[in-house]
Length: 414
Ligand SMILES: Cc1cc2nc3c(=O)[nH]c(=O)nc-3n(C[C@H](O)[C@H](O)[C@H](O)COP(=O)(O)OP(=O)(O)OC[C@H]3O[C@@H](n4cnc5c(N)ncnc54)[C@H](O)[C@@H]3O)c2cc1C
Image 1: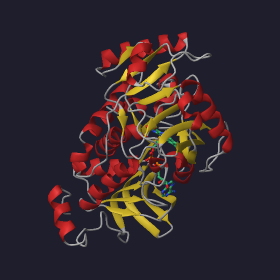
Image 2: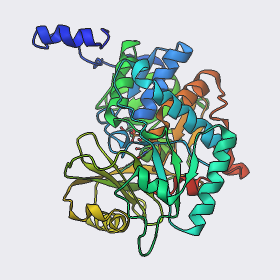
Image 3: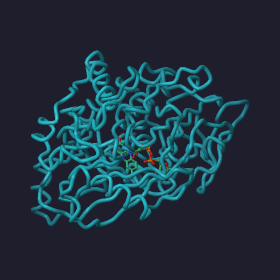
C-alpha cells in the first residue's frame, strides 16, 4: 500500500485526487484462518495488528457484524490517561498511552493524538485523599502525575468556577501527557495497517456460533457461512456475554448503555480535559469547537445503543455548577454505546474454558485509552499463551479473589 505523506497529497492534488487507493480491502472470507478475531472495534483491530507486527501471524480475519469502529470505539469521548491506582492497571494503561505517542507514525495514519493534559477535580476531602494516594502510587509506577492546587487548576482552565457553592474545587490530579485522539482514526489506522499486512477485515458479518471439537475451537458459524480457525479472539465489548454464551461459557460481566453529548461548536475556550467525578461529568473541546461532554451509565442492564433526555439533563445540570459558562450553550446531539462492566472495574484479557478461545473485554466506560496496550497484550497472549501485561487480568482472578479494584480510578464514566 502506498504511504501517506506530504508528497502523496501534492501528487494527488495535481490529478484531482483520483489516485488514492482504498484504505482497506473488502475480501470474501477464506475457508480457514490461523486466527479469527470477532469484533472490529479498536481492541480487536489492535489485537490483529500486533499479532502481525510483533508475532508474524498474518493469516488473520477480523469479523465485524456492523461496520468497523461502529461500536463503542466510534462512540466514546476519547479521553486518554493512565493515572490508575493498582500496578497492573498502571502498567497496561501507561503502555497504551506511550504507544499513542507514536501511533500516527507507526500506522502512517494521523490519529490526532493530542496530549493536552487531563485533570481530575477533587471537590471533597475524600477525593483529595484519594487523588493524593493515586499521585504517590503513580510516582512509584513511573507514571507522571501530580496533585495540583486550586490556583493551578484555574490557571490551566480559566473557565472553571473554583468557588462553587456546593462543591468548590480543592485541587486536582493532573496528568500532563494525558489527552485525546480521534477515535475513528484509531480504528481506521489499525484497519488499514492490518489490511496492508494481508489480513481480511470482513464487515457486515455476524458470528452466530462457535464450533468446538474435543473441547477445542475449530471454527465459527457466521451469517456468511462457516469459517475455520485454529484460535479465536472474542473482542466484542458490550456483547461479550452474548458471544461467550455462543462459545459455551459464562463471563462475570454486565452490559449497560453509557451516554455522551456534544454542544454546538464555539471558539476555543478550554485546552485541557477536565473530569469532575463528584458532580459526575467531564468535558473537553473538540478540534471543531464542540464541547464534548460525558454523561452517565444507565442503572439497569440493557443493549439499547441510544441516548436519553434524563442523562442529558442530569449531566448538564451537574456540570453547570463547575462550568457556569456552558449554561448558555445549545446541545447539538447525544448518543449511547453498550459497555461491558466487571465487578472490580478492571478488564478481562484471558484464556477461557474452551481451548484456543481467548477473550478481551470488561473495559467498561474507559477502554478507548487502552486500545494499543490491550491489543499488544492480547496478541502476545494469543501468540505465546502468556503476556506479562495481561496475566493479572485473567478470568481466574474472579475465582481466586484477586480483584484489581479500580472503582475510584474509573470514577466518572469515561
Ligand atoms: C459514550 C461513551 C463514552 C466513552 N468515553 C471514553 C473515554 O473518554 N475514554 C476511554 O478510554 N473510553 C471511553 N469509552 C469506552 C470505550 O469506548 C470502550 O471501552 C472501547 O471503545 C471498547 O472498544 P472495543 O474494541 O472493545 O469495543 P467496540 O468498539 O464496541 O467493538 C466491538 C465490536 O464487536 C462487534 N460485534 C459484537 N458482536 C459481534 C458478533 N457476534 N459478530 C461480529 N461482530 C460483533 C460490534 O459490532 C463492535 O463493532 C466510552 C464509551 C462510551 C459508550
